[in-house]
Length: 317
Image (cartoon, rainbow, N blue to C red; front, side):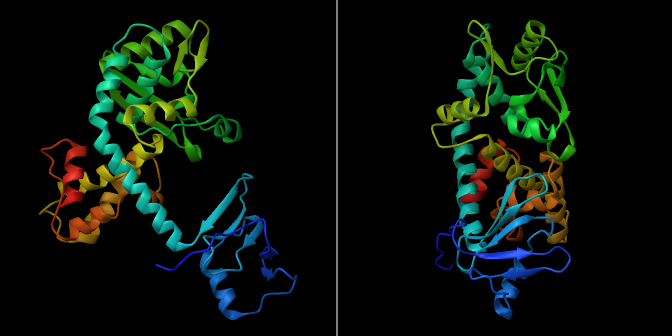
């Protein structure tokens, strides 16, 4: 792996000009003509719609390019080696989460079984929902900018309660409707009580002390860190769930799928559906690639064990 350098996007770099006919200027304002440099820029596949584009003059810079997308957000393109390093850390975090879940779930069950509207119970409900359904955590910025919601920005009207089920339906990322069911009688009792106390247009995950307060992204992530004893966040649940979904799909085809590539493709599709992502995003961001290596070597998830235990055993083999 190459030795990378820290990029400074506020410093000198290469600028992109034009729309249909792109050209590039170096830090001195001269047109870039060097073929090797132009080939490197082309390989970055910078979206044409990006504006205010900065490109690293250093081929080993950890940030290779950044620009502003059509929604006004700054977006980054990282060096492949930097992304690989970050991916290793990300999947290691998912494994830490799997190891910590048994104790964390016991803590959640204790707090959720209460009868009050305290913050600990609301946080326990948030943990249980993320754990069971892999909802994105959501934040106020996404709600304001594009109307998409996540766990912390759901209203009471976004959940339908039955005897033991909570059906979540709401506008999610990229305009998709999220739809998932969590079966948990203790959770349902809490959510039903919140709905009765607050009304359909109020925030679902909230607590009273003595006024009502809404759970925030920061509070939920702080609670996750406290219960798991590690520097983990809600996003790590989606990484873990994505990896388990792919591994479970592959295990169900063990011995019945002669084409490994076809089985892996179906596993990626299954994961994308479970997480509400595209196949490309599911594969690149939410599935530990070691799952596919194990499958090609003839090793699959032991479905007789709990999903987390089976995953840990598979990756330790």
